[in-house]
Length: 337
Image (tube, rainbow, N blue to C red):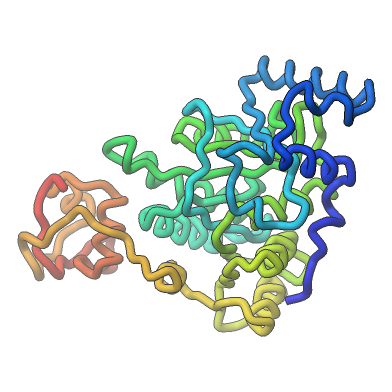
């Protein structure tokens, strides 16, 4: 894939700050290196973050996402909102991205893939945009929402192209609140008060790719911004997966080209998980009724299971979906697991 120079999207003053912070400088030690105006601006940002409960993670922090250290021109600092207190970035993160103009069907597929990746233990990273991004976050939230205790809760991280004192698009404010309530986080390299500008989205895409172990592209036309995220991912040595469709049209043309350039094609989450030697672990030992057919709702009620539990059983081929909202048991299932 064509290379993208990450440095062209990182403001020069931040590169200097990165170098100083990587030397271990904090607080007043930085003051001689900043103009009076810059120092006053820093004080204003710190005060605003304190008021808005936004955490500042400098690049020198032990909790700064370690994969971001690997990229050229990492953000000098990350601004983080997390309802769970000090944010500890998950180890296993996968970016799921795609076009804003996705169909309902493709958004549903993105939600399903993200849900299955989250069940397998990945935290889903995306950009909170309309279309695929929102669907990806919602897929991860389904896992967290159905978890029976906090240790099972899935998390999703939204990387934004503006200050965390606002949400763009505004229609995704409820989704942002759900992400926080589920134990996820909102992340930005921009301080409070920064508006969403076009070039900020390009820079945001490099952070999404930089934080993640791999980049999953659901749908991308020839000019989709998700192609930029994928190319950053390739530049950073990340795995790049692209949903492969049988008949390519302009809505998938960018993804098709990425596959020709070396991206890994996939048709479902199993292919992605296989790349990492993973399949979702299930808490359900085999125990009753192989061969039975019954309605989905009756099965969940009878065995005291959730939709997420059912998904795990499907992935392990212990149940088979049938037309008419029915399923067939292919193994013995213990109740209440």
